[in-house]
Length: 268
Image (cartoon, rainbow, N blue to C red; front, side):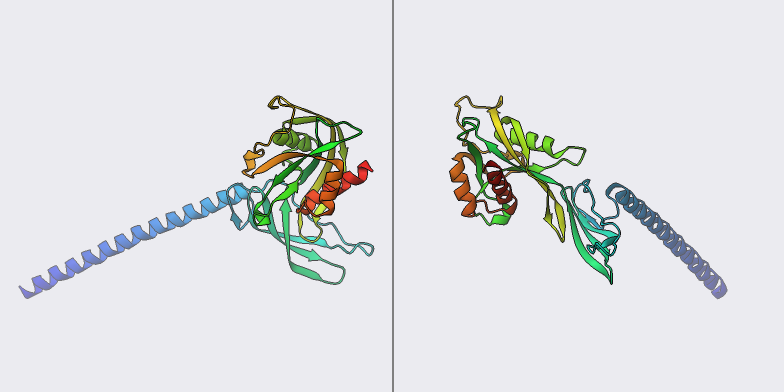
């Protein structure tokens, strides 16, 4: 009788161990499947966003800068490594490895950013000999609520848009104005050490209001540029007023002041 009890207990113990092994096996299989699924998801994310460690929303689709080989007459450095750290549709922050003539810098932080345009636009109601200009008055996030004068600006879309086309599009979107005379004022790197894209300034003249004109013949004081959620008002300023304003640092952002100053030099 005692032996039968021990036999039943032994059998029960063996069954218990088998169930335990079965449960552990199931858990292991599920864990492996979850791990494989995670790896595949990560691979899909990498395929979609590149090799960037962190991606906010959509991946950056603009141009990515790398410097070419260094020689004795050129010491700016050669890019031998380019590792993306964080990106969004607006920019890409990368860790470049830069080879100089005598050493290698392993932690050169670099920012790829879309090229931009800035445009000083002549008031359609002014003449060639006595021009006035449509100037924006606005604040931006980095200005800590300080109000600045500004010119029309925006990015060059990364899907094949050229700077002159971007300039015409932005002027029409922000001011509802089209212009017949366009003067390119150059191409300028935003930050010579860290990148941040290129700026293409323009002077636009011989302008007229488009279909969105309110019919008053005067610049509208309504908010424009609502698509990028910045508050900005339009005012007309004479040539002398613009000159005084740029000299007195009323165009607080360096790209705006650069565009206005170049345009003033061109009009001299």
